[in-house]
Amino acid sequence: MIKFEVFPQKMATIFEDLKFRELIYQVTNEKELKKKLEKEKITLYAGFDPTAPSLHLGNLLVLLTLKRFQNFGHKILVVIGGGTALIGDPSGKQKERELQLKEIIEQNKEKISNQIKSILEEVKIYDNYEWLSQIDTISFLRDYGKYFQVSEMINKESVKSRISTTGISFCEFSYMVLQAIDFLKLFEKENCELQIGGSDQWGNIVCGIDLIKKIHKREVFGLTLPLLLTKSGKKFGKTEKGAIYLDKNLTLPYQFYQYLINTADEDVILLLKRFTFLSKEEILEIEKEHFKDPKKRLAQKILAQKLTEIVHGKKELERVEKISEILFYGNVKDLKEKEIKEAFFNVPSEKISLKEREISILELLKEGKVVPSKSEAKRLIQQGGVSVNGELILNLEKKFSKEDALYGKYFVIRKGKKHYFLVEL
Image (cartoon, rainbow, N blue to C red; front, side, top):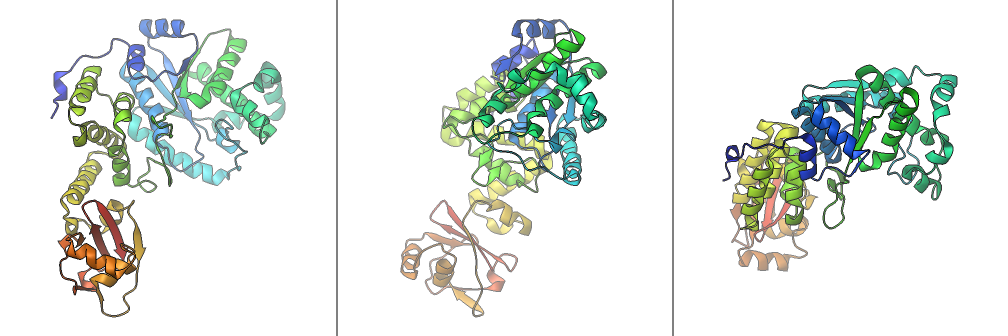
C-alpha cells in the first residue's frame, strides 16, 4: 500500500495546483488573475440554486475547488440561490423549467446548506433572496437593467441555444441579470473579486464581471471548471437512474462508493486529481502502481475511499467497505437487514409469494427470474453454479421456507461467480 506521508511537497500557488488538476476551463484575464493570486489573498464565491433537495457530484467538484482556494489562504463564500431558484437558470436546459413553490425551495435550502457546511466546515453562506426580494420592478430596470445590452444577452450560449429551439421566456431571460447582481452585492459587502462555477455558468459569470466594471470601475474575475465527462463522452456522476447525489437518502452510501469503484481506468487518474487532495507526487505514484496491475483497481479504491469519507464520513466509509468485503467473500448472512437492499441496489430483483409453506429451489429460481425455465435451473445446479444466501446448492430437491429467508424476507441468489439476484417475499 502506498504511504502518502512520504510525499509532503505542495504546489507553490493555487493556480499551479488548479492547472495540474486540469480544473481550469475558462478564465477572464488569466495573466492578471494569476498575478493577483500570487501576490495577495482574495475573496471568491460560488453559487448553488436549491432547485433539488441535494447537491450532486458535479456540485461537489465546485465545493472541493473552493476548499482548495481556502487551503491556500483565500477567503471563500457561498451563495444559496433562494431568490434565483424561484426563477430558474436556463443554462444547460433545453426547455423552460417548471417554477417551483417557495416552500419547496425553503426546504431544499436548508438541506443544501447543511451539505455545504459538512464539506467546507468554515464558510460564510449568503442567501440571495435576502437582496433580490428587496428590489422593486422600477429599481430593477433603472438600477441594473440599464447596464445590460439585449444584443449581448441574446448572444450568450444559454439564451442563443434556446431562442433557436424551444424559445425562452422573459422570466428565464432575466436570470443572468439576477446572478450578476449577486456578484455585485458580494463585491460591495465582502470585496469579493472572483466567481467560480461549472462551464455552463460562463455567460452568467461574465455578466457579473461587466456589471461591477460599469458601476464601480473595478476589474473582477471569473473562472469555470470543465464539464465532467468520461472518455466515452458520458456525463460523470450520471447513471441510468439519474444523478449521483450527496444525500444518502437519494443515493445510498454503498451505491455512491460502488459508482466510484466502477470508474474506468482511463478516467480514474483525472478524477483523483480533481476530487482528492492528494499531492501531485502521490497521484503520480498511484498511477504508476495502478497500471502495473489494473485488475487490483488500486486507483478506483483510493478514489472511492477519499470521496465517500468526504461526503459521508469515516464511519459510513468503514460500513460500506465492510459490505463490499462481505459480498466479495460471499458471506451475505453477515449483512444487516437494512444493508441488504443497499448492497444489492443494482441487481435484478423480484417479489414473489409463497403459495405453500415451502418453495423448491427450481421454483425459486424460475419465479425469481434467475432463469427462464426449470430445466435451465437444473442444469445450473448440476454445474455447481447456484448459491442461496451464501450456501452452495447441489440438491435438486432442496426446499426453502420463510424461516430460511434472511430476516424472513430475502433470498440472495448468486448465479455463477458474479451475477446476483435478490428475491423478496
